[in-house]
Length: 202
Image (cartoon, rainbow, N blue to C red):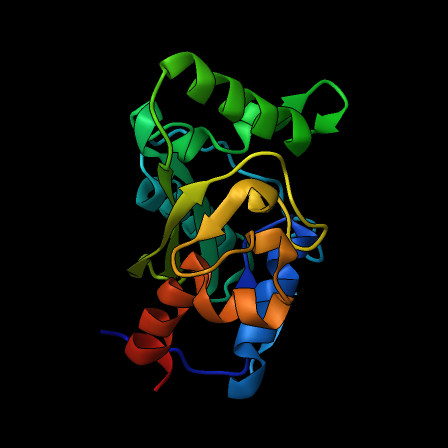
């Protein structure tokens, strides 16, 4: 597995919450994180049907555009009773003409669960796939998951995305009710990051 050298890593995201989370996770390694928006990079179209495929698109586009190694993350929530939906379309469920509305997306997920007549618990997992790409076209892929269940109503003001309706296994609070440091310790992104660190930093 190829090691990451240098102290600057481009993170191919325009999501400020995701960028802050990644910066926190990388701070102990002395790596400065630069976001795609800071470099004025466009968001490439995500045309794949897997988290790994979409993560690769974003990482390679950013690495080619800047000449820097680029880390991208494609993540979402898979709900078992909805056959894994929304999955790679997690953010798409929140799209509106005026931006993303995750309260609407969470309501949509809940309504579909009710219509499915599936008894609770509504098992689910957050998935995160990290792709690290180099300008020469090489990449490394790191998948991570956090198991749990969908709860209703929405709970908590921390976090982002679908965090208010996801209760991780072994806890009695939602991701959005957790202290961010605790969430970052057990999240799907933390799982993928541990593999990334072991493979490319340690």
